[in-house]
Length: 246
Image (cartoon, rainbow, N blue to C red; front, side, top):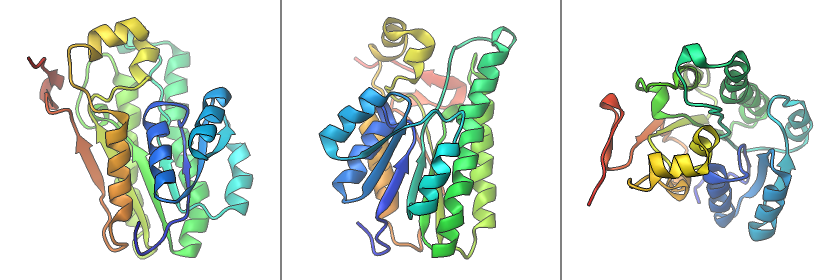
């Protein structure tokens, strides 16, 4: 893997999609992986498939993680869990959806990072990853709150690097365009997401994001990939343009 030999990782949102792919990838490079998510059955299936340690946790309350960080030297944290309950104009977004996006997309990653950094800074070893979004870097319609939470994460990463200078702890944000995951299926439903977002387009696959994580981890300790913006070849950030390809 790399000269600094990270050994243990914690990944949120590991029940499916990007989180599951990252968990599988890090197990392959020999890491002990704690896979967090709300779907206990899916996590148990992942544990059977590749040997992760499953943790069924609702990130509205991260208190159960304090004990884990207190007893385990977590070298890598991937804040991947994200929530997009509905695609709608801001005026039509419910107060509950606003609060849930802030809780899962922003509040939980910050609290988890703070828990992780206590040990990482002391050990002078660690890597924090945050799965952001192009919606946090460029305006997208009907996702104002989601975009605001991801933009906040992006600025947090930039500021956190300043705080961590000299600690040897690395911070990487990955801000992808369209990835074929369950995120939009939550907002649009299975059929709606497939018809509107996936069937006619070539999307990034979760395994592609997992490979970026593995690449950033494998670089020498002196190299921190601060941000990766990654898009489908057929999507451009300006105006959120995506085209079909024959």
